[in-house]
Amino acid sequence: MKAAWMPVRVVAAAVLCVGAALAHAGDADVNSAGSLRAKYAELRNQLSNNQFQKPLHLDSSESPDGVTGDIYALIDHPFATAAAALNSPGDWCEILILHINTKYCRASTGGRGSVLDVRIGKKYDQPLDQAYRVEFVYRVAAQTTNYLQVRLNADQGPFSTRNYRIVLEAVPVDSGRTFIHLSYSYAFGLTGRLAMQVYLGTIGRSKVGFTVAGTQADGQPLPIGGTRGVVERNTMRYYLAIEAFLGALSAPPQARLEKRLRDWFAAAERYPRQLHEMEQGEYLDMKRKEYLRQQAGLLQPPS
Image (cartoon, rainbow, N blue to C red; front, top):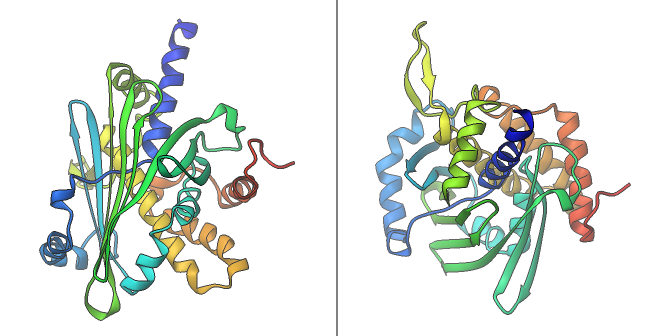
């Protein structure tokens, strides 16, 4: 019985890790400066009063063949600064590597334009040949003086997963701040759905997201679980990575990596029920090694 379950458990880990590291937004016709400004106006009350105690709003949804997560947030950076920092494929690798499951990211340019070679794995030191490779085609879909849209698309992932989409859009708003929308989704076939069901029935059974799905017996809020919980946890992790990346721009270049790592971990620990996975020392040690490997373009961790 144990041997029979092993392949499914491996698939479950792959779907979870790859799904954890990827993002999406809807079609281009609904992504514009005007519609994003309208969304900002719609969400102003929620941005001021919410469980996150910061100007942030999170949504998630599930369909028969995929999941989607969206974060809308107000950040304390001028649009020009944020747009300049978020429109480079190399800078996106600096963002992606902060996530616990991202083992490597390398930007290159070729016949398909800019491509990010991303490796997704487990939450500990791991050789890259044991991680899962996903290639994202990167493009700046729109860039004006008052709107930015960046897209990363990967058509295929492991174990029947597909249509990975990362989209970030941003507009300037009042008081020199920027309103951003980070959205992600991926689709899966029968194998991927089975793997996710196994994960949610075993090691992922007690993990939850942020949306309040009801009330517990003691009167406390009941956070959502299941696939939407997975989506929400990782949407938040990627928003915190963007926030940490932008926040470190004010530090001297040689100090930025350490500031990003420490700020990301501290921000994640504000939500321990959803996001705690390891202690700070473990995270810092793992990420320092992975960053050195990423900068060197190596396929094995440094000794």
